[in-house]
Image 1: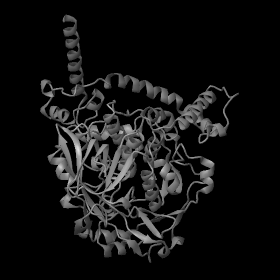
Image 2 (image 1 turned 60 degrees about the vertical axis):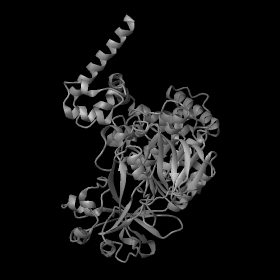
Image 3 (image 1 turned 30 degrees about the vertical axis):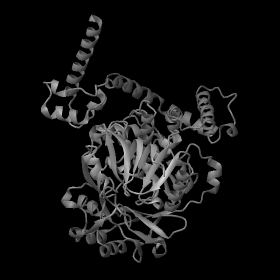
Image 4 (image 1 turned 90 degrees about the horizontal axis):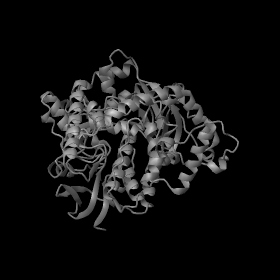
Length: 595
């Protein structure tokens, strides 16, 4: 085993895989440490990728040279564009995946990537000297040296599995937790940790379902791949789509759940750990919406070679016997046989107010955090952060400026800005409603927005970038009606003239609105991009309240714009801060002229 790496990534879930691949593809010697090599990129919850706003982020990862979209195209078993009845600004791709195949393909990609090693072990501590990580200690007591570290531990930090009121340690069902690293994060890195929780759903045997009582949910007739680099027609030809199905809970279901709330693991720890508001357990739905007599249950296949079916919408922390009763009360599931019962999991997370927009910890500049450890929920949110954390770890090692994505250029930028500025008291999930510039940052133009960024980082190949440049020029020519010498589809593939024409159509549809939006964004950006010194002393601002000073000191915003988005910060507070910074700038300028 080598004893020195440029970057060490701890964890090999969706965040860890993107982080490790980004670093290795940037030419850096990279190690990923995972508790179980058979669990790389595992899908312990819904075996799906994408969805509202999430699909946009996956396309953005792909445009910059990440892996999730390509892997999804080759492991997907149903593809749909959500919100297709609405405007293109909110069209969101989603794919149901073969969960085993997804994991196998991602593991194979990691294994075949140059500069990347994989080690099955437990990272027990970070070795910090002179304020920086210089090594990672593993379970055997050995220390592996590194120039930077990325922590992407998912739900494994001191993970606790809850089955009703029974509980035991675990990072996922039948997988042990990461028992030691939390202590090191607290004591060696000065990071404060909290507790979040989430729930899973039961899996049932397809042969025990009466599908005649359900509504079929087929994939799109002409499915679209996630990755910009997937050749559409050959991919469609080889794709075998499987249907999903829709059924509903009913008053009997709600009575079974409502009568037994006291036996559920929801809430866990007397409510001290929060669960995702937008992915609630059925117990929470029934308590929160007592007037509703039914809730959607999407019945979704988990793979081509398994009979396991995922009951999307039936997240629960009830004991096994009550789960069985609840399931059998639902139309089409009267005789359903459970293969895996649902469980809840509680785990450590770090408030993202402790990290910068580069996802580096403020206490330890070469330690990066990505994924659920930052308090988010969802594979796509995790992969997005993992990619940015990995890229920035690599840029740090190379001595280059970090990659910071703005809110008006990507959903990933919105995600990172939100969590690092506002923090959260519940797991964060991305929605299109969070994007004030969603007319411009659509899923269809992710390549036009971000492929130059991926190229600059070094993650887009010469051949792929040449095709992209040809496509971009075709879009410009079609927009300007210069169509006499357009390239052929063969020259453009995996892009196409049809795709270029669609891009122009969508842009022209929103053009007037985008111009207005861009003018507003420019005006806002002019002031909001003003930098705030890292060592700025907010106590100097006597006009600010003690609470405001405390919030600003805790978050330590990097710009006026970021400061304005901190929870409970008023416009008047920003005005005072702006005036002071301008005064400070003039004083420094006058001092230089005097000298």
